[in-house]
Length: 173
Image 1: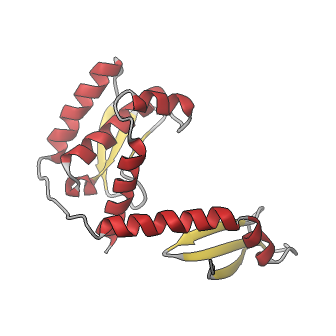
Image 2 (image 1 turned 90 degrees about the vertical axis):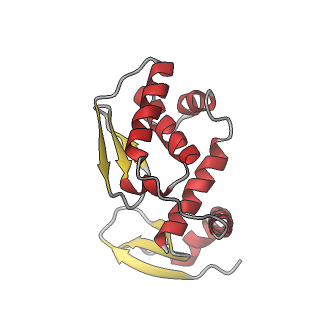
């Protein structure tokens, strides 16, 4: 696979690779003497897997349609009640905000933040996002315990994650 790259030198401590809009960016520290090709070759297999995933998500997005659910806030509250009751957990509050990179998040103080663009998702995906965040009330990180908890409700969470990524692509257009 031919990987197109742009090299950037920044005031950073360690080199890193970013993928944005199908462009690979190699970020190098200002005084770093190792050629960018060495870094790209070291992570070539990982990059190819990422591009494969991105292509798959792009393909899925072509078959999706945007829905408009004006009652999505009430749906969020309903799903929150359902999952918090099942897990016997409470949250502090909910916040709605425009988010560029995620559908939702859970703060360390158990405030649940939801992306306003959730109103464009089918209800089954909205319910999954709410469940995912309620699980974060008990386990903050995406680790083995978190996925065990999420698997109690969604054994196919990888499928839902791909769909959510595909909706991000669709809504970005």
